[in-house]
Image (cartoon, rainbow, N blue to C red; front, side, top):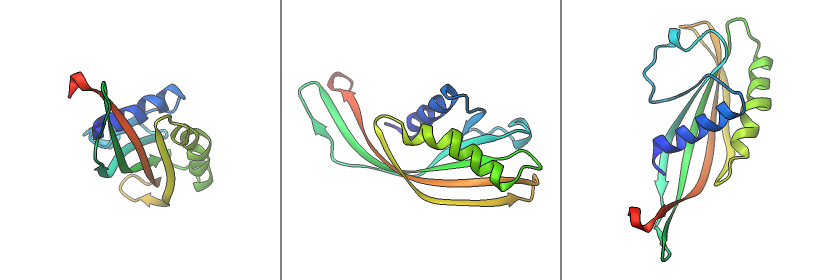
Length: 137
């Protein structure tokens, strides 16, 4: 699974759970176009794949990655509201993704002084296996 495919899969699953807007870290959209409500940015800070495993019709590629989520709260929101948005909306979706095993490795909250809004940074260690049909290899 390529980096953009992992990010796109997370964005699709969050959207299916009515968590939006969600953007890729590769999206160059300016902050003022991302809205004044909650919004989430999904990125990857590291990626490592292991030796492929071959079967007659499929190639399995194990991987490990560090996911980075940045959740920005509306102006005037409290830290409790921001944590609650992550805890009740985003975390259940991420930790329930089939084919991806995640664990929380770091969480921090800060005020982005350039936009006067709270931002929750979440780092997740994840691992999974990508399947590719051998005819595609």
